[in-house]
Image (cartoon, rainbow, N blue to C red; front, side, top):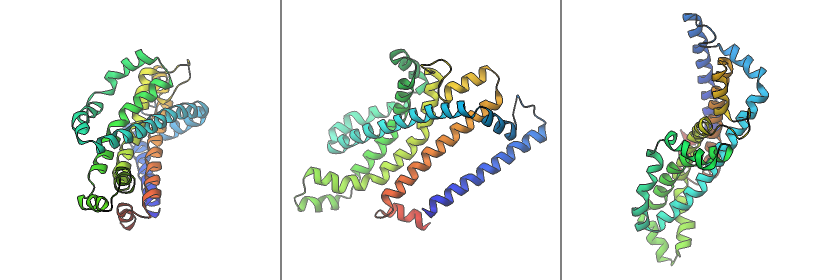
Length: 263
């Protein structure tokens, strides 16, 4: 927990330094506000547009969280199947790589065509972009159990279910959380990318991606920067939430979490 607190303080200190650098660039190069607004102008835009900013943030957070949760459930189920059957893994595992290699901007228009604009399409895009890292890391954790431990369980007549629940799943937890940590950051990116294409099912109401398009069209540079900062903070919130959950579930019994606390 102390380690997590120090990490948060470090992130806040770096954020403060970036704000100072931002303001210094404006002073040194005398940049006009429509090219690069100052942190003060952006903060004023946040205060003036706070309700609409929170609405956009909430819509994007819901889409990203929904996509991440769905990817976690589906990814874990697929990884369990891969771990139980080597020939299924050999046949289908390479196809999961397609989820990473196909650019999401190439399939987003097709998803929009099939499902229409709105939260459903955005959540599906976030789900697709989150799925591959969870499958890859969970599968690796499930199949990399020490062979001696597997033999020990088999010597005691452990069933496949007992082998899975009492050995493979606990052993795979650190790898699974690594996959979730990677997916948590890109879930926000996937949701915003989806909103850039899928927009909103209600005119004038949408997530951060939809609001960015609107602010850019209206040349509201101050609000545009406020939206980008809100998206960054949302990504940090997702990432540190997963870090806290990882510490909560692992710090009492797994060496990986204890080693992090001792650093």
